[in-house]
Every structure is written in structure tokens, then in C-alpha cells.
Length: 525
Image 1 (cartoon, rainbow, N blue to C red):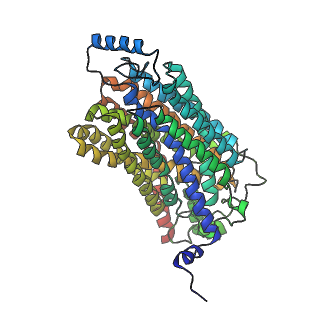
Image 2: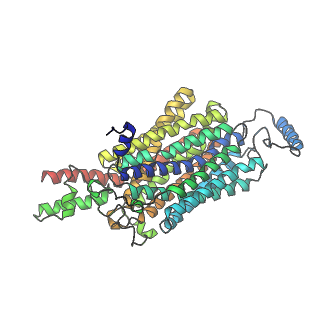
Image 3: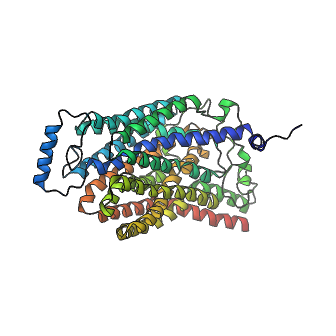
């Protein structure tokens, strides 16, 4: 009998379950990367919607009159003036561009709270497919304003609002799906790698938008819109919501861990410690708590999906009562404020400071997202090793604030310094944001207080990300209002936001450190 080829031996070395999980990991990665791909063009095109004008006011007026005379017979719409595309060619362009950001992000934040509740009651595949098709339509709609020569501000604002609402279908859906397929063992590392889809989407969106921004900025939106719609069709054809839908086994609970927030772990641990001191036999659950090396975690047999059928969806208030949800939600508000300010304003900042054109500034801004990929993976790896989610976030937030100050100072020294600071800042800014929106959300959505009701995962994810999206809306808006007084003031605002995010986690960090101390005392007894 002939020996099997190496490639076939490699394929058959993995089980059906492993191949399905790899497929779902890759598919959900690409699906949400396409969402972020469609969000990035607006930040790249800002430099084209308003150009820096070196001409005098009289020359600008003459050029506008020439444009007005030429606009009748045109086949290819020109820019409204030498200063950009009307109405963004005025002196208040930063406020108008900020309004575009705010309209999208505000709609996203409001819609996210509703999206999680709806997502728990509808099949994920249908819900996500509808959202992706809608997002593709409204992303392309913004770009059509170029081809149809539309200069009405409200057209662009309404396109942003509609796109923000339909994009809320994405995050709760993909997190719920990935949470169904992967257990708690090494969840931080797995989701840290998986969450790099945001940075990959941002990078691809920047490169695609930058390719056309100087020649035909409408295509910077139309092409990403088509990509999102196509991925929506792929979602409808291939997405599998749960392992049981294809007769795959759920992740074995014997190898899984959960990272409870500090308060919950210490309550369990102190109960076990008191029981030992009093000479009482421990509950089997408590015995298991400390049986796995030095882990301070609790195995949940029913958190991987066994309870998804025959259980009612959790209420909004019920999700808020889960320990840690409120603290992490408001921490994400400030962390996302910083991240999305960079997402929407970084290319324009590079254009102003480095005096680069819109295309080169867009390409350079992708380094921030490259740093974000490594930051998300590093945060997941550290939190898995330390078994302390809040402490990991706190450590990175503590380092992020002085790094932002250094970025504002060093980036003015030249292109090389800007490249280095973009990578470091991207890692420290996006690390906590990535960890909270993925591993922390999945941990809290399968908290032991839910008694195996995995249908709560979508609502918990939506609450945390929805609250964070309020900060995502405020950040770019504040940047638009503050930047006319100087970019340094924008960076001061970002540093204050990082400090607030850290303060909100102090209680959980204290509980995690106390948990470690109590664990040591328990072992000594």
C-alpha cells in the first residue's frame, strides 16, 4: 500500500472538529475585518475633502467662479474648489468632518444596545448577513456623492447614520459565534490573535481608500462597500453558528478556564479558605478551584453552549448585574475614545505635521494598526499567563498615557520618529481595547451567575461595546472641536481619557491582587 502524500497526512492529522473550528475562526475574522475595512475610508478621504489652500482669498474666489462655470457640462465631477469638496472647503471644515464621524459613531453606540437584544432572538447567520448587505449599500452610497456631484452635507450625514446603525449587527454576532466554538482555555491568546481583524481591516481599508483618494475618492467608498456586501453573501452561505449544528462536540470543559473578575473569584476563594479553617469539607466545586496548579479559576461545564436551547434571553438589567460588566463597560468608553480618535483623525494629523499628501498619510497611518495587532495579541497572552484581565488592561493603560505625550512631541522631529511612535502607541492603545471587547466580554457573557445560559453573551457583548462606542463617538467629535486650538491639546485630552479608563479598573485590579494574596494564604494553610 502506497504511503499517503505529506499534504494528505497533514490534513488527516486534524479531526473534523478542529477543521471546523479553524474554518469558523478564519471566516469570522474575515467577516469583521470587512466591517472595519468599510469604516476606514472616511479618515483617508478627509485630506481630499478639504485641502490646505496656499492661495489668497481672492484667488480662491476666482477659482470657485471658474468651477461654477465649468460644472454644467462636466462628465467627471471636479472638486468643489481648490480647498476641497463643497461643503467641506470652508474654514469650519474640522467641525463638519467631525460631524460625519459623530453621526456614524453616535448611531453605532445607540444601535449597539438594541442590536444585542435583537441578535439573541434571531439566527446569527441571517442577522449578520442583513447587516453586511446594508453596510455595503450605505458605504457605497457615501461614495456615490462624488459621481453624482452631491454637495449637501445632510446626504453624507444620513449615509453615515444609516451605516452606523446596520454595522451594529456585526460585533455581537461574531463574538457570540466565536464564543460558541471556542472554550475558555487560552481564550485571551486566541481572541487576541482573532481580534487583529480590526487592525487588518483598518490597514486594508486605508490602502484601498488611499489608492483612489487623489484621483477618484468616490471609489474609496464604493469598492469597500462592494467588498462588505460580497462578504455578506459568503456569511449567508457558510457561517455555522454553533458546533452542534454540524454535530461537532463542544469544547471539553475539563481543559477550560474562566477568568472571573476580582470580586467574584475572591468571594469563592474566601469561602473555600473559611471552610478549610473551620474543618469543613469543601464543596466539589471549591476543591476543583485550586486543584489545577495555582489557578484561581472555576471550571464551568455548562458554559460552552449546552444551555442555548430551552433558555430565555437575558434582560438588559440582568446583564448589568453581572459582576464586572459596568466597570469594564465604562473603562472601554475611555479606551475606545482614544482608539477611535486615532482611527478617524490620524491621517489628517500626519498630513498637517509631516506635510504629506492624503495617500502617503493614509499609508503611514496603517503602522498604528500594525502596532495594534501586536498589542492585542500581547494583552491576551499576558492576561492568560497572569489570569488577570483587569490588571493587564491597567498595566497597558498606565504605559499608554506617557507614550501619547511622547508621540505628540517626537512625531514633529521627523518621519522616522513618527514611524516608531506609531507602532508603540498602536500597541498600547489598542491592547486594552482589544482585550475588553473580546476575551473579557466572552468571560462575562458566560459568567457562572448565568448558570449556563450562553444566550446572554450577545447582550453582554453589546452592552460593553455599546458603552465603548459612546466614547468612540465623543473622541473624534472632541478632536474636531479641540484641534483648531492646536494638536497638543488633542493629545492632552487623550491622556486624560487613558487616566480615567485606568481609574475605573482600580477596584477590579485591587480584587485581583487580593485574590492572589488569599490564594497564597490558602496554599500555606
